[in-house]
Image (cartoon, rainbow, N blue to C red):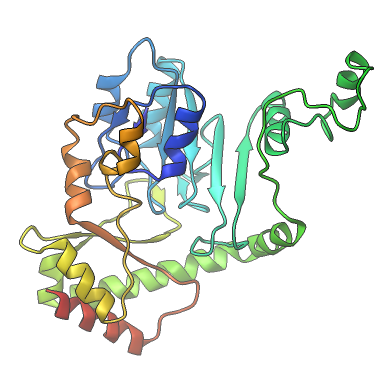
Length: 312
């Protein structure tokens, strides 16, 4: 199970693993997975949920975990946009069996590229360590045990699993690791920037009527990745985006929009004629703007609101 509002790397591992993805609609109030639609689509064949925490926000994790336990599902949290967010004072990324994080340039902390994966089981950790480096046995707890079973092989070059080449460089890892001590400061600045932008919008009747800012879900203390915005129905998203970009405001679709509309989907036997009305709406009327780790001054706040006005 995967929400339709997702990033490509949330979906491709499902397909690459030979599994069949089933898309679930979203809740327009939070842009996260719709728990009602999720429950309807779970069958005896359902094995796992790839949960995407959208732009720092999340769904009702209490209800989600009940659904996971009831149906004995594996929970994978895509926390790439939500490093530092909490639900009921518990970090997102600590609920599931596995969770992934991204340290790309625009994220809460950055190592330029790369990211992090976490898990709860030591055996899973060993598998992950092998998968990240070609399926090698090197550096694993049972490295010597594997070598004894394969005495005819050079123990330095034993490949006992399938794998990839996903190792971070020492420099990138050092850059990313050094920023964790500043994460709370970054979250605070981003939250202040978001609050100041919303205040400016609320004080401008014309902008407020046409740009709806989504709020964090109940019980969530969000580490905001960006500011998700839903445009009024009378506005043409494409025209608004062009005008905003022309006036120096970069925008993006909310994640990648409804991923079922992406051309790569046609390469696989995936049902696209689904009733995902909320994901379609967010795709048609949604966008988001970024949040920097440095305080936005009044001059740039005025520039932003002016750009919003000109785009209407």
